[in-house]
Length: 451
Image (cartoon, rainbow, N blue to C red; front, side):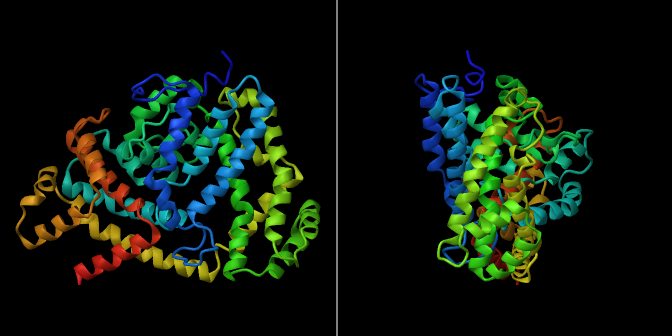
């Protein structure tokens, strides 16, 4: 058996009703992913400009489609290098679908929304827990640490497996995980420990993945490296293109900075892309991609053994070569000169008010005991009726996951803490799954309820 046959497999957590070959299993994954609602919701989640109505500016969906195509090109190159050791179609599809799913767990307003949620959780959860549950067990500090670290990558895994119940192959789920640390675990010095890759709620799933792919206990699944590189390549130029299209940045301003501070490769690339002619960004992006695609492939093959063993601890684009340095310059420029613009920050402020307002409005559901929460349907007092109406806004799919896991999820020492943990997850699942416009509409509605 080849090294890649051990990593690209048909096994699922629940076996298929009829036996599947590896290619059949991966193709079935593809159909489930493309048709799932979290992918559709990406069309109304921000990439750079929250609440933007201009059709040419990228949403998370258009960004993810671009990442998917870049990932496909990378996977085809790598597969050509590996033939006949690897099943090409399965490898390519795994990378493509990991790319399409990589942002589905992001909350409204992207990384800014993530920061808002983390801040709110850190401030509010300890007090809410005391009111609802009381004295903590010895396990609670670990569970609290898990709940306070909301992370889009970990939420992506939870969304496609626990909430959508897509029953994807374990190979596809493993390829989706950019980080190997659980949110309930302390950080170590490892590169892939920087952020949490899964929550305590998905610990049983991750144990199954690691049992099948032992190297993922310390490092990434090899195909995750290609997904990450595709993401970096896609947004490196796209964010600047959107900023110019939106009028936040001028081409002249970008050109001055680039010709003054970019490396020689980037200057030559810029000048050769004919900045004054229509279609400049398409040409610029294509020419940069023509150099980055072989570079990433070369890096994957160069470090292939360490990657397969879970030992490689650098992104493929960390190579100190001119095209990679040029991409890094473009990303750094966007961070400094686009994301910090008044126009972008003003949109984020609107998102901050809406997201925090919705969290505050639903927080009273977390002050109830488990018995009070279950008995909400029978409340007739004014406060109980308000809480009941909030409860009714929670999606049926998320409530089903809450009811199942709050009763039977393993690894919890206290039943009360297990119930409350999954009640918090219920709220986070609901709010993080909202689109930018939906959270704003919900905020307006709830302000009306509170007035």
